[in-house]
Image (cartoon, one colour):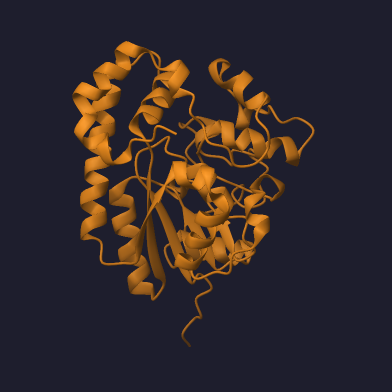
Amino acid sequence: MVRERRNRAVCFIGGAGHSGSTLVGMILGSHPEAFYAGEAGKSRYLQDARKDARKRTCKLCGPACPVWSDFQARDDIDVYEQLSEKTGRPIIIDSTKTLSWIEERIADLEAAGARSVFIFLQRDGRAVINSRTRKYPDRSPVEIIEDWIVKVRRTTVFYEALRHPKMIVRYEELATEPERVIPEISTFLGINFVPEMLEFYRHEHHPLGGNNGTQFIVARHQGPNPDRPYARLGDRSREYYENHASGIHLDLRWKTELGTDVVRLFDEVAGPVNAPLRWEG
């Protein structure tokens, strides 16, 4: 007897890290048919005690997560089918950006008869560089900029060669026109847009990995102790997110935080790559 598959589709969100994938994932995961797994590739490390706890547990629940706490990788079914069985949601959102992971999972899903779609999330590189220098202050700006160039170029090549349904989403457009962009993404995924998706912070989420700031906004609505270890804010982001209104808002902190010398360096090194992504807003 052939087993009926519960997972109908997987939406991969790719691009450079710090481009807003946690926000997009949580918005889509607020649909009643979708579950946002966060970076599902981290499911490989759930039982690896050598890994930092925050890297192998739900970022909002910690070890007591009803989805991930007892999750065990299986040989007979893939991670997305397991998640659909556990959550009752046929569409899984995965923001793992490692292209080898995405390629392998797409092949697995194709063999299993499930649909794969890909969102190439793009953001002005200056905002990405600012976020990464804030998170990694000990790394040189040149290294961070060069890493961003490599990631954007590799994802562009992957996107252009991909023969599965694909879509480019600009973070800045989503953040300034969510009422237009989210319905467009919903149509792309084959789901009906529901306005409650825009209030992603009111919904239950269980992501692996992802942006602490966006998760902090959700945590404020899910428990009395929002600054728990699993949605912890760094000192350089604390004031911004503690005073951040719930909802979808454009983050242009790079304009005041990124030094003029780094902006000049970025334009010299990455200007041509960033030209189609620039957002002056």
